[in-house]
Length: 498
Ligand SMILES: Cc1cc2nc3c(=O)[nH]c(=O)nc-3n(C[C@H](O)[C@H](O)[C@H](O)COP(=O)(O)OP(=O)(O)OC[C@H]3O[C@@H](n4cnc5c(N)ncnc54)[C@H](O)[C@@H]3O)c2cc1C
Image 1 (cartoon, helix red, strand yellow):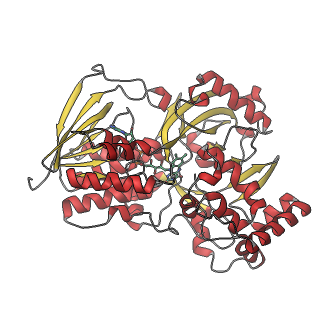
Image 2 (image 1 turned 60 degrees about the vertical axis):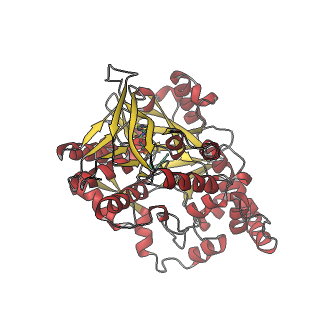
Image 3 (image 1 turned 180 degrees about the vertical axis):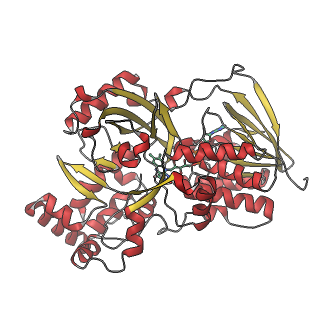
């Protein structure tokens, strides 16, 4: 291998662009290949008729100092806003604080229901659920069955589209920290103990004033300015390997995913043509399952079976333009009510005043779906009508006040944690390390790991340090400790950042 290897990076989302930026900083020749016509991946900011909105609001928070430093290296400080975090749960026509606060939740439920919840909690202490390896048993053992039913079950089932007793507890453990109802009640009674640092982390977050896309658009410009290449609308179709090394990739020009994914119309005229890129090293943020499927020669049957067994939950947002007065102070509201399909509503004016226009705001009605299912396949106009109707049913905005609507579909938004995903990922990793150790999976779907932007970036940063600086970080060790994520705060009973 030459002293400065030729590197191909697959994907121009947070992980791919971090790799690209770290490589150009080291004067390593790099080509970033992006299937779409925009940067940012799931963290893009969609743009329609001058409106900018996220694929789910994207907070910038991290406990990794290197990532924090990178954010400020890419964007100047004046482009960051510090935003207050506010979110509530809509349940039974009432709004509850979120993260749940014991006092507020129990008061909102009324004396009778609150008493039932507390009794149910003690019952779960006496008779803990037998199976705590699944989401349902894990949460019920910490909050009791009744609170679980009210505040966890419906929303979780909307998000994943499967019964909560089939979802692995891993996901709960990563999202809902080591807290319980008792913990929350104790902290409601004795507030303010050692909470200062953690609470500030929870209650405010950084946000680029034009949305996360601003970070990724700037990162892409910086990479190109330093001599890196970013190729759009080309999807990796084959990764070539021989004699225990990957040697390059072949792409096909797709024309991008188009307006349906919040991107512009295709700009390429050579759709369908193939291009080959030689590489000494490949950093991949394409989904791990697709990566295995495009290996050429192909992976053996048992490895392909493991790749094909990984699954995902997909996502679509219907952005509705409404009068500013119809907005709400929260960044988002979770909708637990089972009779409505919408899972969460963003108010983009609460994220940044730079995202909205004079006198109006944009609400993101979020639907958790499977690619190709009935909701995913509905025509945009029908989705806009459905979202407007549900907004009115929630009592937030009458349907006739909805001025305009835009639909953005995002496949593979969430890697699914089923009972076998770890074993399958291990099989895939093992085989890849044998036949092509110079292919480095990074990021969220790239590693089939529930990584946020910061962890996705961190895996790319560590990979470049391993590849170029001779470091030996365990990249697969990022974001595995159960209690990392956002916060473990006394006084908050739960924390799900979806
Ligand atoms: C609803 C929602 C809300 C979220 N909120 C937050 C939040 O508040 N804060 C936070 O930090 N994170 C949040 N996240 C997570 C964040 O979106 C991801 O962590 C991040 O985008 C992952 O970056 P990535 O580069 O690994 O992957 P991606 O963003 O998925 O980017 C991968 C890129 O690779 C491209 N690609 C895929 N296959 C190919 C191929 N074959 N050839 C070429 N290109 C290809 C894709 O087009 C894409 O651009 C949220 C995610 C969701 C779904």
